Image (cartoon, rainbow, N blue to C red):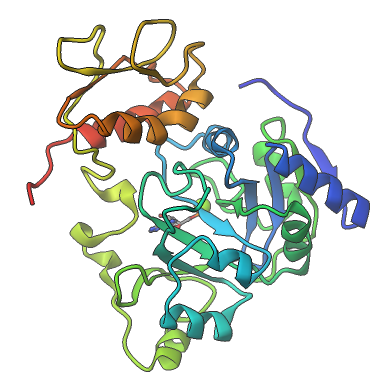
Length: 320
Ligand code: AMP
Ligand code: MG
């Protein structure tokens, strides 16, 4: 990826507004939360979300947590329920992430939840994060602001060391307090399931809900984070990968200059291809039972994450 100047923004109004505008316009901005520094992008901008994966060098499209400035904005994107309301009243703003069904009309990029129909959401407590999110005026998707496989950053200097030249800016809010990631609780199924331990202790959640929380994250078949599932985002249609050309009766998902039904990126740009991936798969799946032939995607940079997801989508799956 082309190197860019990474601007450092300070905790003054003009800087916060400038950083927020840059994010709204598609730039990546790292910002402090009470857990760790997040690498923020406008959650409704497919390309900005693809750039997160590129900047981090992530080999897989793990779903991202979306951060909001207010509960009313957050509720507009998910299927809210009573347990969520109780937990929100008790622990938000704070280091708790809730996974809920995503509203069908939410404009959040499908790449944010890696093709899942659920969304992980949170209201952070850090005052600077709140100011920044409010100024941004859009939902902000943010994984930890480190290169993939490295330690989560708890200071602007950590972020700079790992991502300098790869992101538009860093909002410097000093050291993070918790230094531990958010607790992730899945409420999308009607019961509560712990997906990750974090800043809000499990005991406090169970005390509030008045019941035990499932801990199925240790049971591989039931893991909700799709990285672990063999066939996760599966269109109904059969996928044929590395298809140099299309056969009669197939739809053709292209890459680079070619004749096809839909093109991930006619200029061969992997960030554009990642941004289009889930949208295009959905669109071609509408022609089910027509199989989908997918042109070869180079296995470099973001191409690795695209190929990983395509392989999962093409994997044999249980019939139900
Ligand atoms: P990080 O990117 O380090 O903040 O980690 C985000 C975590 O949230 C990962 O473990 C994801 O798998 C998890 N996550 C995000 N969205 C979802 C979702 N819709 N369902 C389940 N887990 C999710
Ligand atoms: Mg992380």
